[in-house]
Image (cartoon, rainbow, N blue to C red; front, side, top):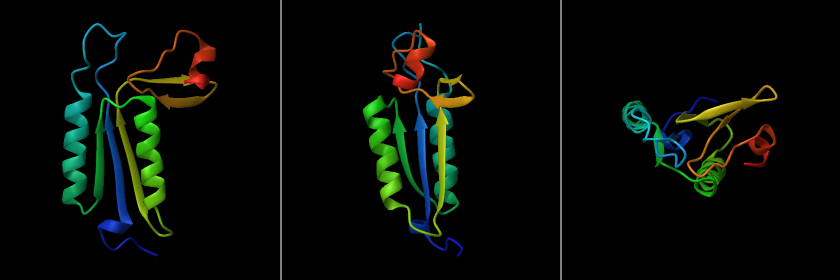
Length: 108
């Protein structure tokens, strides 16, 4: 079944640039997220965009996307910001992540 309209083409776009432990905000994540969101909208996606999301806000955004997903939906998630890899898993970091050790990765 192909996705025919915006309700079948969903996107979550997140740009996280302001991390408290970083000396200055990252320069590109917000611009990247805005540019991607604009392109996806032009391509017929129903786009939710989030900027500088905390862990709780990222969970809410993903839960909202999941609740809107139906069989046959096309779903895209875009993230720009800091990420880490641990035990062969990749993680997108919320702006309030507190990661000092390997064990902190899974907890956060």
